[in-house]
Length: 370
Image 1: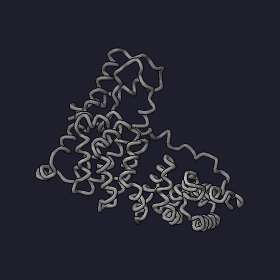
Image 2: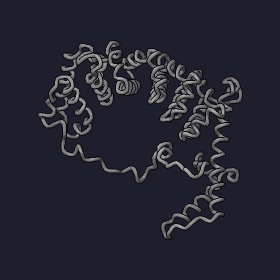
Image 3: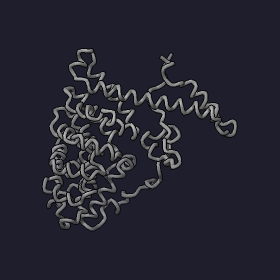
Image 4: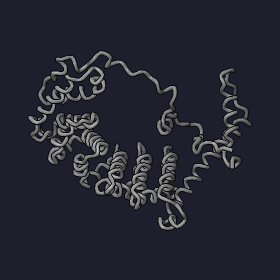
């Protein structure tokens, strides 16, 4: 089997020989360059071939797969592999051209909750920071399928994953945001905030904040739907992430000037003041370590108080807003040990203006063992 895959041992030895640091770099011979490019090209072709194989499985009816002994766990593992491949923007866009996008969207309606959830995860990866794939998913009615899972799936994990996919699909995507509004998406977000699942609530708050930040005219809609009172309740949550998310949303509403100075909060100013006073009291009783952990919350509380009451909060007077060491960046313990995600790495590469054919990326499986 090892002979069928890329020459991993050869690549390793070649890389060590050319970058061991013991001698200055030398120009590659034409033979070395040809060998290296063929090795990389063979691996890239393997990825495309594998994506086509996965597409064929996704196109096969569920009952046929079950008759052949394929389990739902096998499908989830296959989707996990596909997600790794589509980390590359080029591969994500190619999935549609090889016929894989539509059957992937079909998995959102699969009878197994694990497959529905995993399909949404793969879609999230495909559309994230990828306008072309966002457009392709919208054209293939992927938004409608995701919205259905978000609003009505009986499994909370499926609902959460679908919401994450919707967030990535409509981010910096005006047609997507318009479709979300028309589909009564804000009402669905309100229902999500009323759930008992913290992760689901966090994702909903993050999307609310993004939408309000990008479209301040939506503040009136959100206020009319009763979001201020819900977010005030969540601002007193035991979960720090929920508190921060709720405070961010309230700050957007408080800073809204499209409907008047106080309309954004729906006439809940007194209730908000009580909530903020309680948060200030709790913060003032925290230990130094706990204060450091709620740095973002401290600043949100002060900003919200200032936006509503035109004066600094008592956190500033008590010296609890900016603590010693707050401005010191944390030590960099990761950059020397971890490579950036593939998509971020790809995005930072300078375009090759001289050569039209881009060098293929080395993707795929780990080297086969003997």
